[in-house]
Image 1 (tube, rainbow, N blue to C red):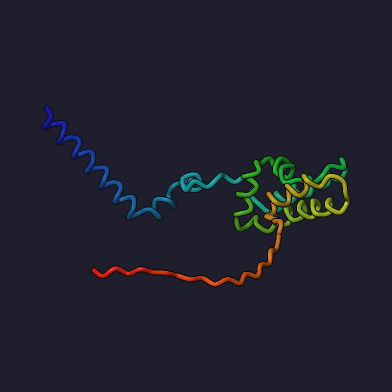
Image 2: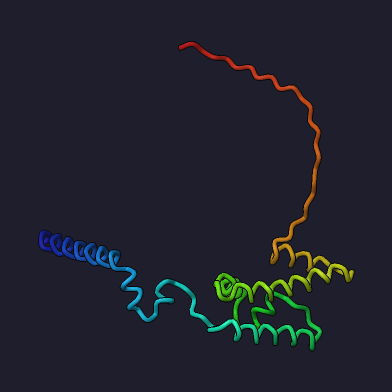
Length: 158
């Protein structure tokens, strides 16, 4: 019985190896035949088919903020587009949407930057600029060091 089970397992493993080999040799052809190619390659399904569709909602978000006198935020923009914050970042990585998303984020960044000049509590604005736009605090330290370094090396003979 153990001998038969061993043969069966060997056949299954061999069959899987052959299938894997065939799939690897014809991967592109298989991808073209699969209708759900985007899902298969682990890309998120597109919620917006065109830049124009996305731009309409982006414009509406900024108009709504202006009407309600609310600040522009990345999270607010993502919510207006029915995306998560990460979803917004993912759309920015798609070639056809990159300029549209970057321009919208630049408008949010500009708004945050202007808030720094209005006074009041700017800690939240600074936090947002650092975390959403890679702003950093720079501190230059100039040091004039003049020292002598002495190395003592003992080499043992073999």
